[in-house]
Length: 469
Image (cartoon, rainbow, N blue to C red; front, side, top):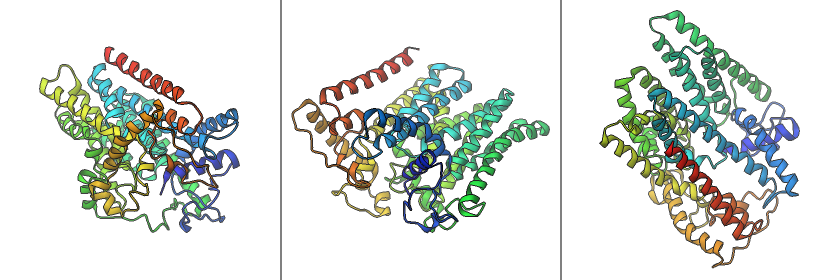
């Protein structure tokens, strides 16, 4: 199911009607019918609440612009997507602080943070409306807060850790599982001082328990059951073959974490090296990573179905980038640093197809047609990476010709009704807002080019500044 669409409907209901109910049965599933006859999202409330200010920003933009652009509510939906970029940026920022605290070298920490932002699937997903970047931020906050709080005896960081666990639960229910390795690590870090362990675990538990109570109440008022999130009667939520999921998440063309983020292979090697130098930290990062990986591998939908790579595994990517800070260190052995830099460049190049074109458009064109789940998972020609690569190779020169005036801009069909297929006609477009505005006829080609150059120029200036620093 499309978590982004449901999150939008819940956010819209909160702002416009003061209700968490969806305006209609979005996916025509009786499992989503509440005790009051209305329909509710099976996902946590956290993403919708987080998206409220972005929704309001989009609604304000609509009022100033005199209406929507393209289709109804497009600015509001686009503004909600900005929330993913903000969460991704915050995750990169937090990765920097974690890596810096771990290795004590700013340049190495910057490289680890940039690795997360530009060399993993975080980059493409910062442009989608899914909750994956926000979930990543919550998990990383929980781990970072626990590590800093225990290592440097900072009470408020332990509170932050518990808040991260609670927020993760409110975003995606299963993410509360990260509490287990965190609690066990706090005990290990305190051993043999049991009293200190109890104090730290208690501090972390308070905000997490509050989130559990909120979730239980949220379930009760919607479905009349403390434990029914909307999945209890959902027959599509099934447990699959664990080993099948393991193989799929590691080597399949449609869902391999190492195919869509090759740098994570080096991250595992770096994590193994960290075990020799800081065993407890390695145990914490490994524990959270394994818990998330094993849980999602056990699901029948381990690939998150119709996603760009293994979307569910995005929250563990910073945990494998942080140990790489030691490899990026200028004092590291020459071979290891060169391997890290080559891996970084290769992994960045792998992200480009997912950044240049929108998989939600190019992955479901009439030319491709409907393909079964097994085909999307295991056949290279129908994998997201291959489809996006082919589309990007075609889209770059094609869009260049449009923008410089060699070819005439394609006509756009007006939106009718819900217009769910309105965006599909832009499968030829590069996935940048200034390009969409040109194809929609909002701005001329020259303005689109200038906006694009300004955006890339600012990003380049920031990267150069970081490198010099």
